[in-house]
Length: 356
Ligand SMILES: [Ca+2]
Ligand SMILES: [Ca+2]
Ligand SMILES: [Ca+2]
Ligand SMILES: [Ca+2]
Image (cartoon, rainbow, N blue to C red; front, side, top):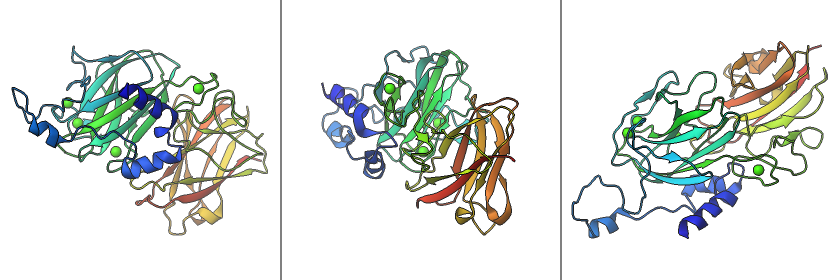
């Protein structure tokens, strides 16, 4: 009953980045079950005491090693799983090719992905001095890096990690729950969703579904109604969609990055580039740096997650990106917050146009 209630709470409110309660949860873990305090376990040791034994309240489904025969495979979604890495060893120390070190103890759970389906994973800390890191390994236990990096470590410290992706192939994958700290491990909550766009219900990992100003593929529209990004579009699937017809005159889009202590999530804007046209995005002067290092970095990715064009610095420390695709289609502009300290909210303004 308790877990059902907890699950329904999670589904309706607790952890969407777009929801104000998410910000509170990052700061204080408000509303989170913090598990049974260790002191209670110490008072009633079991017959074979073991300092590294998991908290008896944690139903441990995760295993120590990727590919272990005893690994639990997630079959029902959405699901919420408590993961305790305290009894486990550090098997994955770094993610080859992803440039991420994960020296803490790690735990693994398997999932069968279906090509084309959208998955949203959310990892949060329940207990321990841990810096949660979440990643996907393929059926050979190799990191899924490269064009589409399936690694989430947007926050330094205890902040929640999220990532969402459309499966590029079907098959068995392993979800890694790990720690950027060389710690003794901790207790995590791993939530896995596969929101269904078009069912009329906005689920965790969706910014809208069926509402006004919502596209048929569940993206909030940027256009005549509003040129301000909304609802934390942190990945390609949750991107806001620029819905105006691009002109040489341009539209000024305003957005914000930063503002979450220790975290640096990007904002992502989807844009349809017409056949034969060249997209031109320029940072407008007011929000550029005058010290030669722009606070944001731009990257344009294609629908498969491949990098189509990198941003380049122009006059006055303003970054921009230009791209003429081989044929028209949908692209995703990532606005990455690259400031050393992302604590303060940073407003940016980008002009979207087509080349004259
Ligand atoms: Ca391990
Ligand atoms: Ca590790
Ligand atoms: Ca982290
Ligand atoms: Ca939905």
